Image 1 (tube, one colour):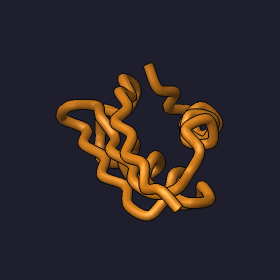
Image 2 (image 1 turned 180 degrees about the vertical axis):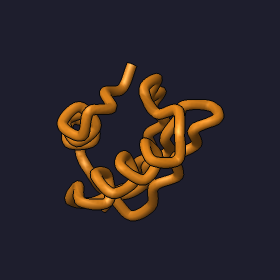
Image 3 (image 1 turned 30 degrees about the vertical axis):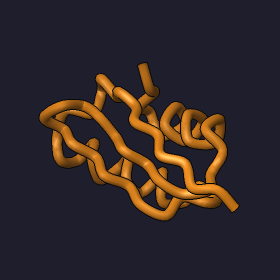
Image 4 (image 1 turned 135 degrees about the vertical axis):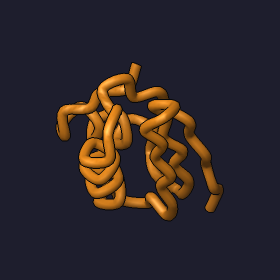
Length: 67
């Protein structure tokens, strides 16, 4: 099984509350092993065996869509 790393820009993630929301949503995605979210840069680094489409969908569904 391969490991994938995605780096996504999430413009609406601008505070600690948003970071917690995004992190919780992404941890629930099948295959996600690590999540690093940074409000200062509005970026999320996700690693694991997940499908990119599932990550993008989870961000959209939690109210913080990727750009």
